[in-house]
Image (cartoon, rainbow, N blue to C red):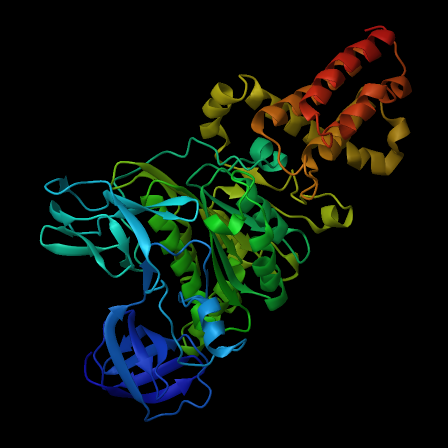
Length: 575
């Protein structure tokens, strides 16, 4: 450590020190209790530090010492199923030490130093290896944890051995460098990759409104803004549970304590549908509630992203949930005001857009240093005050992400869930993903999606006329359009997260359901041309059967039966 300095000024979590000569973003220890902080500004011999803990009682003259290292994340076996705070202190370990309330100045390592892991080498003595290459594996619960050559380490394997080790013990010697199972990485620095790929493979979530209407590509970024109670947390839990990503990193960034408690208590009980084990076995939770120090909130998103990049480098697909980036931006605003910086729009710092870009642009699908393929897909929840989507955090987020899932309070009031509005939301990955959908689902799948969106847009236009003159004044063709749009909304877009069958809908099943709705629309048009009454078209029994088919255990057989029933019902109407 460098020479010790002292505190010159204290302004909440922002402390000014003199007598040390740190680098930007060095971690320092502040005051007699050695509170952890980070250098965020240097003005001459004055060092401005943001402290990650409450600074009550800290006063000028107390000592400050520089560690000479940036804020780093500890990466290795033991991350999965862990619950951390924003600076990677394991909360269950701290609870065992001091109970329900964390004292200041207390720290614990991110990875357990005592636990032994069974290491199985993947290379042998004399092999040439390069940075990022897999040299061995460890079973972390049901997941294979791949031990990677640390960055900037290359050369011949001088020594490697199988056996049981803790994360600090040497498992291999490469080019004269001792290698353990643990790496340390600065959280603000993106981990390197060989090549980034085009986002042309979707992240399949099993949620119809997302997969069919507004798909997210693997390695892409999505924003899910919405007011209180619109279902952000439930939607993110559905994504964590059902998306085809192997690893989930959930960052509770400045959320209310009761909401975070709900996540912490529910996640361990959620069953992973792929393995039948608890979903927590492949999840890392970072909990930073709104009453925790604001500086740690700012660090939490970087800590979570670094952990996600580590698993991506192993060749896994990672899904990262940030709930919510609005609270992160509020932390930046508070720190910025204490630094007396020139405020931007609504008091947010002028660099708000830059920080949001830095975070979201770390999402990618890539070729790793080990020549495998991995991805990080980022879903950032935004909590705009009063549900106002024109505020700066939402608007700056929309400039960066390419998928926008707009949660709507009116849909919530109508009990339509997921409350994602089909006319406000969009996905800019649609064109890039068409090839995948045509090859892997059905050739006419993109055309089917466009048809459904067109019907919903027509319904919106017709609703204005209905409000003026009533639906009875509409021509029969338009009455059918409104009925088909209602079927798309209520049968296809609505999905019950708590129903065992409806909670997850595979892509082929989504296509089948949409095809049945289109078949009804086509047969209804033919029946109308043949002179059938609109009332009779609306009352066909197969239409009612289709509405409840998605809840049946034998759902695929039910859809086949509905298909036959539609033909026989409309045959009776002269089609």
